[in-house]
Every structure is written in structure tokens, then in C-alpha cells.
Image (cartoon, rainbow, N blue to C red; front, side, top):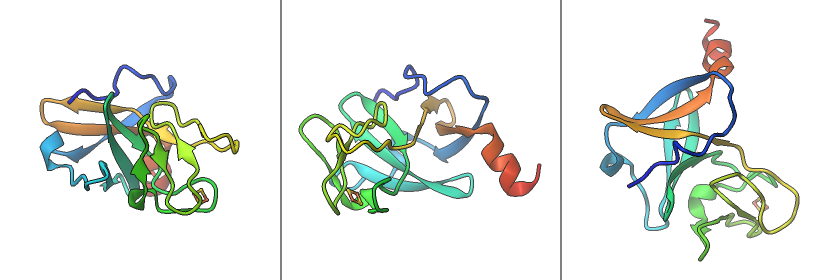
Length: 128
Ligand code: FES
């Protein structure tokens, strides 16, 4: 499974948080979506044809739990509440309502799968 490490989110410094020892350990449902803990928060991992992506678990429209949604034929995440669609590769709201789904880069390393959170997130959380 290829990960989305080639897709740059931006050039911010990141804290890379290990979310699984191996891709096979990620608890994807039949909808190819899985919520996992990452550095004190939850991220939604999306298993798409182009690799694994990490996005926010709640819909930016009204907080729908995206883990209960599904992927459409183009690989977009569909929110189960009002069916807005989001591209997991870039966060765009491809159904056109004007929202943006936050996302983070994913890397597979020798010792596991990592999500690159913003560097300030953990330091702000723990006062480091
Ligand atoms: S809460 Fe997701 S589309 Fe409305």
C-alpha cells in the first residue's frame, strides 16, 4: 500500500506520531475508514486507491462522524449526515459547499505508520 508521503501538505515543522506498527494493523472498516489516536487527538485514516491519507474525523459542516461515511467512486470521503464530499488528497469539498477538510501527511517507516501533526500541537498540549 502506497502512502501519501509525496503529497506535501505544507512546509510547517511537524511532530510525526506513530499510529500503527504496520498498515495491516490499522482497523479499517469495510468502508476503508478508520479512526486512530494520534498525539492526544483522533485522526481519520482513509485507505484510497492512491494510498493512505489522514484527515480530521469530524465533518467541517456540522461535525458529522466521517468514520460512519463512505468513499464514493472517485475516492472522496462522503459525510453520512448531509453527504458533502471531501477529497482526502487535498481536503477540498468537491461537492461545492465551500468547506475544507483538514488533513495531515502520512509516512510508512521501518517501525510503523506515522502521521505528521503540526509541531505546535503537542507542545501546546503538554506545555513543552
Ligand atoms: S455534517 Fe457533514 S455534510 Fe453536514
